[in-house]
Length: 294
View 1: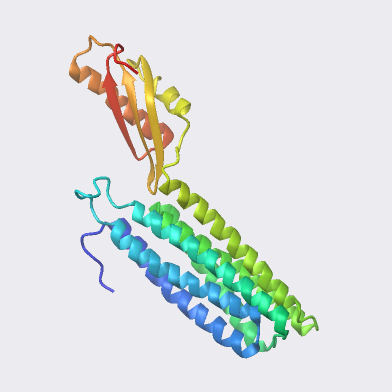
View 2 (view 1 turned 30 degrees about the vertical axis):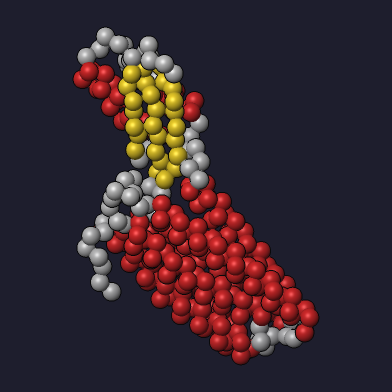
């Protein structure tokens, strides 16, 4: 697949990762759904749908990334990075929807009954797909940390939850072989809880980003800023988290007798100190004399 030359190398790396993960997720989902349906294993079919939403979230991520990689414009002067966070939020929504669908399947099994067929094929499929998911989630999580991508981190959590779900399915298949087919339903419930937990974490994290929740206490920012020589006081402090770190803006008061270039030099030192010590991506410092009204 050709890559858009206008996007950054970082975004190209994120996109390549998502494409590979998408292909593997579709293979895993197809194997689980087909074999799960043939063996009447509700937990395996549920796990297959879980894997299918992994693939769907990859598609959502690719669409979100194509928008997030665009440069700032008149309508979006701060860039389009929040579209990446929005895509991560949609992944959380897909997970929540999956949990609901699995729960409905559990209720249906209780109503009509049934038991899974624990054949050697089911064990082979679950074992191989388990190894694939484990490898994919580990690789994607590392890439998310390396590239500082909320999208990859959220998607890795999504794929990683499939590992635990697959373990629950394998346990239920062993139980069926031992004469306890009802544990297939219990495994499906466990999968539901796993999916719901991951969905909540993703929705909470991305929701806070989109709501511009304060990233750092104002007192902590003020403490670092006032360590810079020449800063008399600090006020009007704001901060928010971003997909690439954090942003802060603040007003610092300096000696009113300073030359303009000297005052601005202090402002630059404050910004540099905050970026270094608090790991902020961008800092905007307003320099003013001490007589300025707060």
